Image (cartoon, rainbow, N blue to C red; front, top):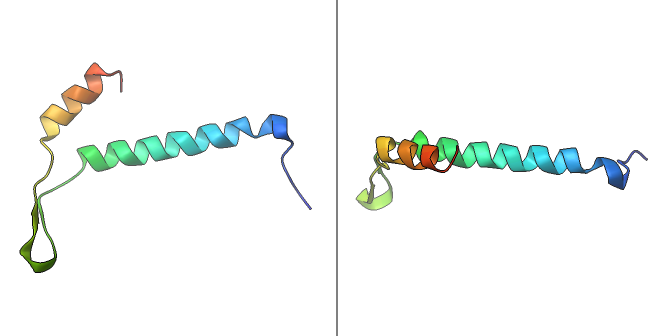
Length: 59
């Protein structure tokens, strides 16, 4: 059986957090208007405003 000693788990958690953060940021910035089931409309977020907000928070 292979395992990571408890003292070596932190990099795995760090990588997981960074991957999730990047996925969320990508979904905020890279989106488009969508028409879904039964004609439901979801507008895209205003890209310029999202980018400015992210920059102002150090992203």
